[in-house]
Length: 288
Ligand SMILES: [Zn+2]
Ligand SMILES: [Zn+2]
Image (cartoon, rainbow, N blue to C red):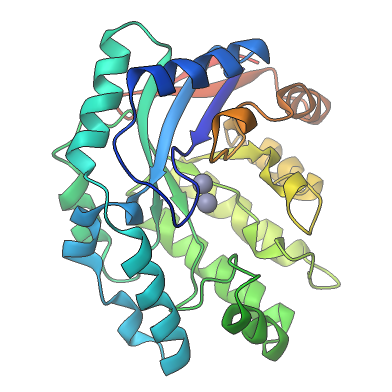
C-alpha cells in the first residue's frame, strides 16, 4: 500500500522545513498501517516561490469579496521555502526512509506554463493535481463565511460543471501526474440529482491524458462522508484503465495512512490488484 498524499503543516500554521525525525514518524505511522511507501505532497501555495510567480491570479474573479478572501488566504499561507522542503525530503530519501518527493499543485488557468517552469528545476517524483478553487472561490474551505455564502448562492449543477471543466483543463495541461481527490466538488455533500455526466467527463479527462487518480480517505472526514472518488466514478476509472494511488491527505502524523485497510478493500472490490507509484515523474506498478 501507498500513502501518496501527505502534508507537513496544518493550514494557517507553522511552515518550517521538515526534520528527519518528523519524516521518520510519518513512515512509522504508515508502516503500522501496512503502507510501505509515502509521498510528501505539500501544497505549492505554501511556498514563497509560488507567491512570486502566481500571486494575484485571483484578480480575474468578478467578485471583490472572493478576491479579498483569496488574497488574505495566500497572505496567511505562502511563506515556506520550497528549496528547504525539497532538500529535507531528498535527505530523508538518501537516509533510506521510504519517502518520495511530491507536491500538490492547484490549477491556475492560463498560468500552468509558469508552474511548469517553476517546478522543472526540482527533482520531484510525483505531482498531484488539484482543483480547490474556481476563480477566487476556494470552495472546499466551506467553513469560511464568505465561501459558505457562495455555496448558498450558486446552483449545484453549475458548481459541478465549473469544477469538471477546471479538472479537464488541468489534465489537458499535462503538468501533473495524479488527479487528487477527483470529485472534490462533493465535499459539502451537495451533488446534482444525476451526476453521471460529470463522472464520465472526469474519467475521460484522466484517461485521455494518461493520468492516474487517487483513492482518498479524506472524504470520510468531511461533511460528504464518502471516499474520493465516489463508487460510480471509481468504476469508470477502472473501465478506462486509469491507474490508482491511495492517499490519506493527512496534515499531521496521526492521520498518516488513515483507513488504509478500508481503501484497499474499496479498490479490491472495484477490481484493482495494483497501484501506481512514481520515481522522477515516471510511473511503475506496485502490488495493492
Ligand atoms: Zn487537496
Ligand atoms: Zn492535500
